[in-house]
Amino acid sequence: MKFTLAHNNINVLDLKKSLDFYQKALQLTEARRHEAEDFTLIYLGDGKTPHLLELTWLHDRKEPYDLGENEFHIALLVDDFEAAHALHKSMGCICYENPEMGIYFINDPDGYWIEILPADK
Image (tube, rainbow, N blue to C red; front, side, top):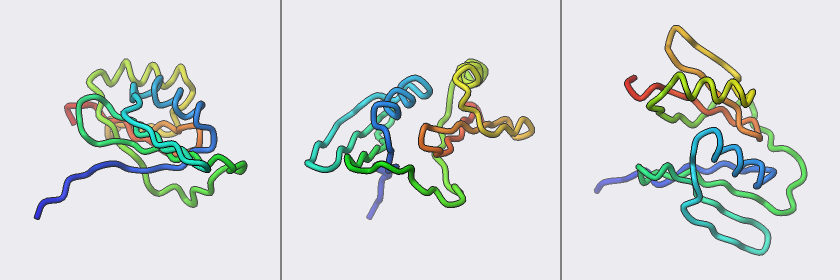
């Protein structure tokens, strides 16, 4: 028996804002979509790996999600760490930096943390 990672899911409040963010900040693009009467699922991919990020938008949701202590995160490798850092700094989405470890985190529009790692780590 062998298991393979398929996707991670996060719920988003403003689908357009989230799609724009993930496209600009991380170059993730829509791989597929599922439309239902009261929700939409959009799967984002990097075009290199089979792993996807599933965004769930509940159409009638009006209030932000309670992320608790936000003790979870998504991590992405980047081949040009300095260019990524400059982009994210210009976007104003860096929420934590750890120069000693050579990593930093950005916030998406809903407050989820995303770790950015150099590809050679």
